[in-house]
Image (cartoon, rainbow, N blue to C red; front, top):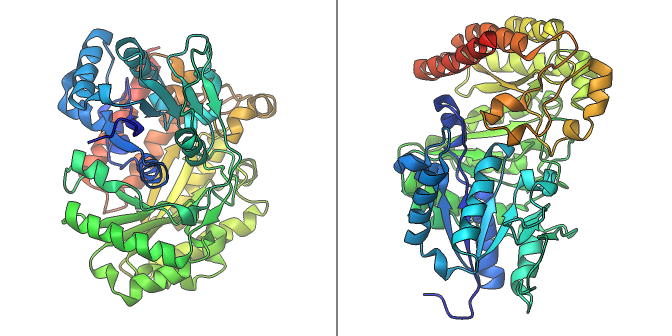
Length: 489
């Protein structure tokens, strides 16, 4: 039970409106680790009572919260039922994590409903989208009381540990909190996984992720991970990792997979020590591991690949494109020839016998892409990467408002003739489809891009035997349907 003076916050993870079945498989299986980290920090450092509602999970149980086209009345009744079951009246604050711009429309509606029915509760909003465009929420008579931009831990600790505790009277505009303090990641307690897993104990469903660092030492033009880079020490890693293994054993006994979610695993100072630990303790016999790494780092030290294989770790390499100009425009490298040689060197190592495979991430439709650059990448992949130990993972560039491209759209418009959709996240249609530029370049329209994408990658994805037939069918159906929609317009 909560004492009368104890502060409390109910965290709320929005779902998505207008998305399709294929997208659920991409957006619904992660544990909201950032929110659980906040919960642990507030409990330990500010004695705050916390709880959580994940509307992605709830929408699978309650049809009125379905992520297709929303109906306000039915959505409101479904949301209120869930909020009242969680005793929302007992909380001082509701904190909504608008992690991605795809959640914007639902975030806005949720806030309006809560403010209308529970006006005494203070609403806090944070997340990547909020940091990118705080003006979306900083409006006259906004339902939000507090807007958090940047890293949330310092701002929330300051809020909950202050004597005022947010009692600032009526405001015409929300209060914006943005701390310049760089939070020491080694002071972070173990994330509050159990808060979430006790609420949603669906075994063998969730993807367990683990961070050894925060931010990224690189600043790719398409990426939102633009916080200052810093990493755990080994002692802190070991303590948290052992606790995570216990949770995976308990909650995911037949799907024991742990993903290192750092943007660049091998830039973390302790990464080789971690690999040695996994191998020495034969954890590869119990778990499947995955991580992301940089092409240049591993190409300069290919002995790492042997360790990856021994540790049963699947590595995702952010290759992105084979076109020299686009590699520079993406801020991937200033030496594209050497970069591509490094990718070829890595792929040769994976074609040798070994248990673990690797993943090659490819980004299509970045500003400046045209049919020639698209096909240049396809040719590279067909020449070097078609192998049973190499998974090719294509994605389309989305113009999120917290990435370098969004802040420099005029440059791409003038340089390449790129055509963007302004404020695409506010449109009442599938947000992912709207986030893709209408024209990556002057003579290359989105429709042509999608046609090239579905045609070329349908063939490439078939080559990787670990892809399930159902996944391939779902992928192909989504992109074929999208192309047909554009052809009819």
